[in-house]
Image 1 (cartoon, rainbow, N blue to C red):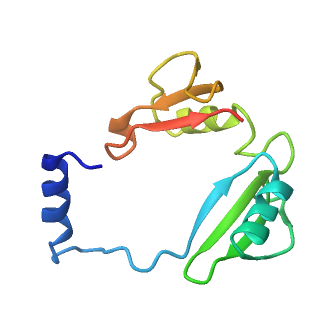
Image 2: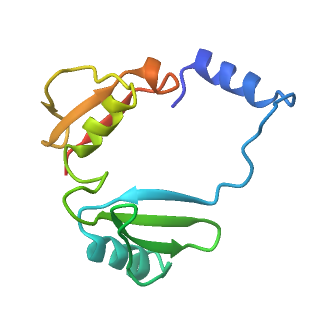
Amino acid sequence: MFPRQSLNRFLHVSQRRSFLFQLGILNHVAIATPNLEKATAFYRDILNGECSEQIPLPEHGVTTVFVNLGNTKIELLHPLGDKSPIAGGQCVADVKVKGVRVLDKEPKIGAHGKPVVFLHPKDCGGVLVELEQR
């Protein structure tokens, strides 16, 4: 739920039409998963999604499955090899190299009992981003 002030600011900004750029239709959302088979089965068997075969993309370090849900698509991602950008702590190293600050020097245990780090909101468009280790 939005606090009243944030909601008013959101509504005010969303009513502007003088954007130089406006996001059009969202093509898909990518989700990294530690178990590609289980995630694929969930979207196919529970949500009736139309799932592609697993597609290895070694140039990106991932194996992917595309899920078509009719009105949107999801791309399931799984690490392909130890150097995958979505494998373990590699993600934190990658964002640091790109100039994104991490709030704590060491991961802390998060709400789900797994190590987490938070990225500085000033480096993430004002959004506090949590990275959870799988």
